[in-house]
Image (cartoon, rainbow, N blue to C red; front, side):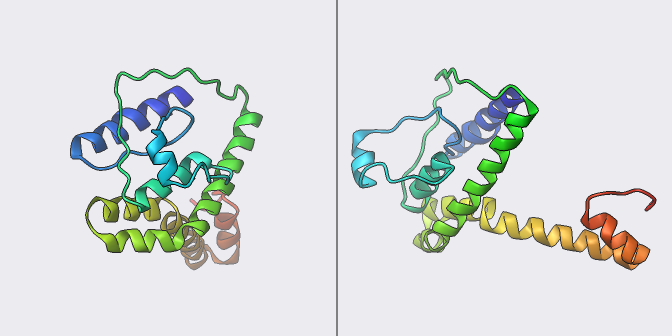
Length: 167
């Protein structure tokens, strides 16, 4: 499943972004950068649980365009059990929240800069802060809808993620 996800990420997101002339996303361990960019960042100052996404967000909000190389090859060890994957997903979620809170003001500043930086900042914001907000609103909407149709039981079942007896 990881291979399919990263293939999707590369071909459908980053290759498409490269063709459109927008910035690509850094996700995972397969990326490189120049010493010049490292100096522009003031050294490697990305220490959240998802430092790759933090670096990507810094680049997006500071007008740094990330490219995509279709011929690059990367060999990376992935988790091999559901338990490991679950722990990794929890860490990624926590890191995403860290980055969202840390860069909230930068998203807005980046969007106000215009051009590619505005689009990249907007995309980062919608994939983080706004994405979490929309997810919460979605859960609330489903729970309220279930409550309206099935009362308190429907609300609790929807909130807890079940569907037993609602159909």
